[in-house]
Length: 237
Picture 1 (cartoon, rainbow, N blue to C red):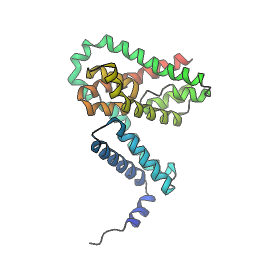
Picture 2: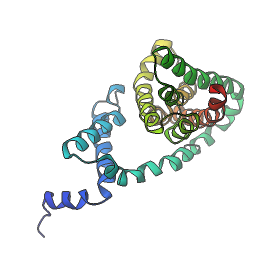
Picture 3: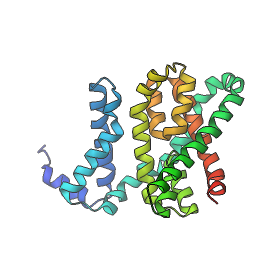
Picture 4: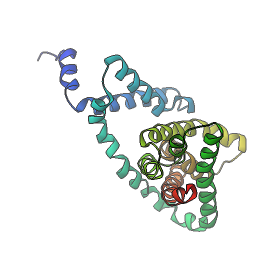
């Protein structure tokens, strides 16, 4: 059986919605391979590397983003189910969650309000436009919720999506060093802080550290999303 030439494969994929899906999966698998080869160092964040790979590919091949997203939207659709599925690991830590309910609620409110209002205040001080300010406000919430909140309060959902991803990448890369400096060693505490500040990307990184850290991060991410969706429009109003 003769091998199929790469040019024929490219012609087929470039005319099909499979292009975006294929490039996304290949980019992330390659980035994750680099991440593991680097010893899972924070600086080798697979999301950041995958974004770089996809960006370079679109630029080199002159592929319009809408055409790429025709296939990539399948991965985007799975964000919702994946976020809900993160509740499954919480079952193993239910008893501890009940004991820590009051501290967790206090940390959730403080973290959610601080993340949103500090971004708004800094953006205003630096002279950002109102649309940019409102796009920054939900930056610490998982992407689907953040885009909906931004649209509701007068921000730009597309800009919010970029800011959310950047926030998650920075959080995932920075939290190991930050926790060492602050001498915070408890995985539940670390995970909850990551979930509030760095949403899904940080949660994925937390699961690589331990299931407990990932479970508490998933809890914080979900609760922070709901709290921000309710409180942020009221606070900005």
